Image (cartoon, rainbow, N blue to C red; front, side):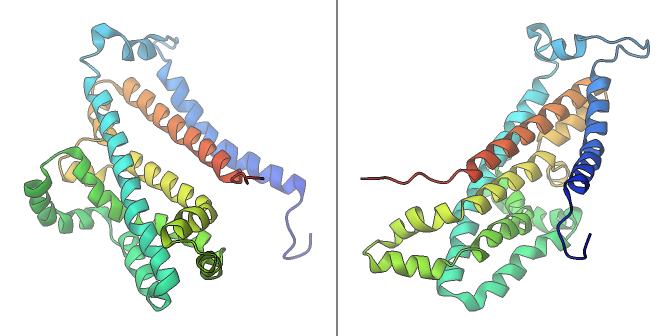
Length: 267
């Protein structure tokens, strides 16, 4: 194989097989663990059935509430990315290109700061947030919005760099389109892949975050899993598997939506 050439079919299959095994082995081990019948060596479905047993609903109420909290956090975090970061990036790209490096630097900073250090800086801020917005779990999305900035920025910027947004917007404006129509009908469809990728990454980060929620005394999926694992490790692993399955299905859905082109109206 020449240097710089693409890998052949065998090489690609080998790489995919190795990567697939790396991911599949721990997941299969987790699945096998959830069916174990204690130390006896047998297998049972009791651990799965118990999660949805009405008689034991109170036992796992904390976990289900944590799942709901994480879902709310994911929605609010994605909303912050789409309604704050995305318009800012588009505005900088079209009107203030000299500020692109400044915006990139600001968005990349959170990845260089450890989560525990970030919490120390956010603790005084959250004392004000509690007084203004209350102590509801959704307020944790403000911190998560900062945490996912580097990943969301890179995903969206990759789409912006691949599209000549200035030419597209000027062409649409010359045809009489308003700025709202330019954004909705011209720019966003061309940035769809980056927007979907940023949304998926944001959801994955929120579902897997533990340090910030624990130190700020908020309950999300990861903090609840740690607490439940001390008394019922099977339930903790089952919920972790369901979270992985949800993210995987979301990835497939986003890949499906991102690969389809918007239909064109014909007259």
